[in-house]
Image 1 (cartoon, rainbow, N blue to C red):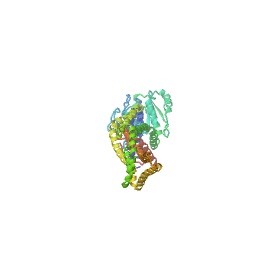
Image 2 (image 1 turned 135 degrees about the vertical axis):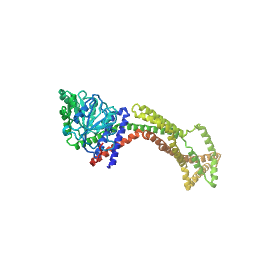
Image 3 (image 1 turned 90 degrees about the vertical axis):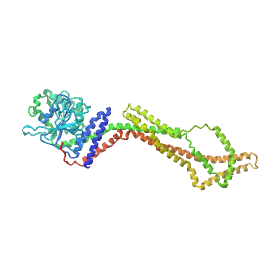
Image 4 (image 1 turned 180 degrees about the vertical axis):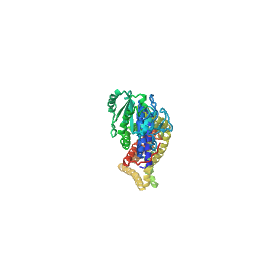
Length: 609
């Protein structure tokens, strides 16, 4: 994978995770997922992307974290060997992270785009309570007497407090550094060692595979061992170890309550506590490369295993989108049924009546033979008159046929009303349906008439063309096959004369009853011809009705249903982005993992901050 393509994939993955976090933040019931999503994006930016570009240690990043007032700054000073961090009894004093670099060393930091997210580096020293999306980097003072610094390959981070998950300002800054860290020192005080939020944070550190060292502070020396045993049993003993994550055993160091003069002398009066704190760090980090590889491997494992649960929150909303589409489809079937009952079932297609009359006229003999046809028509005249009177007396008053356009428009309005009523009903069960209701009110209903008229014009034009084709089908067939037309004409006329001959032969010598039998026999014979023509025309008429239903579905109801169903997920909507994120994140993760496993990253020349 080329460097540009690789950077683009990491950038899009971090952006997608960030977008998903912002989406969850807007939904109170999904807010609990925001920490995992932000941490996933930070791992992508600060660990995976630099590692893929060849950013190799030194330095390793060592983050000191803990709840408010736990004594994090005290631990930072012990690690640094001098008072570099502002120790303040006020809980929540530290609002932004500060990096303490080894004395006189400028380690190269990653040059990958998006490194440390929104955190901007301060160019001048500021107090720790500056509440901005920034970080500081300072050099630790050199140890006296040119003593070797055991942490010369480490950047020590003093982090903001983990007071509450709802902190909208400095908690994201803390997560950014925690994602970057290779080693995390978790600080818990004697009074609040088992507070809910810090303990949950400790669980989170283990879940993402961070190498953790626990430091218990503000403990009476006489109570140090009992508290350590209790902490190991009640807190560390209940930590869930995720499958596939390589996490070393967690050391537990106790730093007792120390007087101010001892705290001011980390290398002298507090040296034994400093050594007790540094020793497990050195034990856990015998090889910098191995530690960094473990950090990268665990970050990749976390993203791979957590992706399913993180994306599940999006899939739940998309499941509601699928339910919306199914509801739209039910409305489409009701729309078609309404159009069928109120129009197609009652539509007579009078054009076929004219076609029937035209076919019967074609079956009359042309030219000189027209005299014979006129004679037969004259014999049928009494029957035609009597049949007309009977049909007129039995016929019901004809009601005006409804216009198809009006019927379809009323069915559409009923469709949209049903969708709105059901959306309002379901809004109490899932907030996504409120978005569907707003989409109906702001997008679908205002544009429904325009969209309907546009589709109906195409539908009407095609149905008119096809109606003409079906109505002319028999006529066109007869005109294209003159021999068949001639045989039919001869057959129709000849059958009537044959009937006449049979009646005369049966009643010979002729009597007065022949005056009745001749018109009746000719009328019956011709009625059979009319019945055959009627059957042929009715077959064509029924085909038109069936095809009209198909045409209504293909040209009107289905396009309307697709437009209504996809309206909430189009034109840059939240659902459109949600679908893209759902498809991109797993693909990008798989692609990056394959690239990482297939080809070890080559070393680059990263740029110093």
